[in-house]
Amino acid sequence: MRFKSYWRTTVVAAIFLHFFVWLGLALALPLLDFEGDPLAVQEMEVVDLPEEGSSGETEEKKTDPPKPEPEPPEPPKPETPPVETPPEDVIPTETSPTEAAELDEAVAELQKQEEEAKKSGEDGKALPPAPPSQAVGVLITAGNTPDTRGTDFRGTVGILVSIDAQGHITGYRFTQTSGRRVVDQIVLNAVRNFKFEPALDTNGQPMKTMRLLRFPFDGSGSHAYEDDENKRIRVNKEVFLRELRAKGGTPPT
Image (cartoon, rainbow, N blue to C red; front, side, top):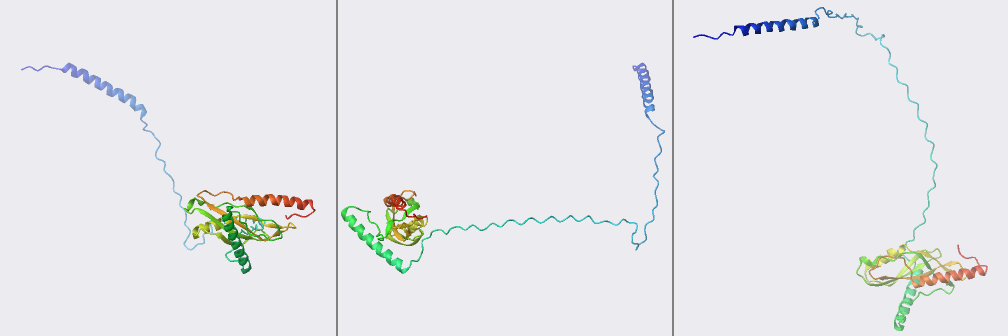
């Protein structure tokens, strides 16, 4: 048996291998630095430590930071005088015996007038008795009817209020009640927010008198109170004050 010989190929490969090895060494040797600086040796300095118990005079004394200057006190705020709010008109829970008797008498007179008005077909024309010296009745300047949508009561509630010379309520009586405590209280809450101008006597001076208020419960919302009596009083008051000025009188302020 004969084997094929590859000696030529082997010789050529060996030559090329040695060539590339020597070429790599020739290129790499210049890059290698065999003469570098020796490692630097750092000299150590020996320091004598102070003995125990020494005061450490060599240490620098720590200075305290400067204290900040105190801020100047704020100037006192000017005192504002308290604002006096005028007392709200409230319906008194108690009425003097004299005024209670006057109200009861007036209610009885009103009920009598209403009965007579019903018989004659003039319902709702009854008015409280006025003093002989009264020239102009009580004028309602502000006030809203109660919101009647929150109750199933349908009818009219009448209330007679006594108004003093300052326009404040001093007493009241129901001339026509609803028969329900809640409904009557709704009326009282509404009247509590009313504003009145007091009645005037023949000399144009404020005086005490009574005023009848009627509130129909018809399922409507709240609105400004204005009845025929208030319209009549407003017109009469303008005419009366005009005539009073023409006579040289002094109208109320």
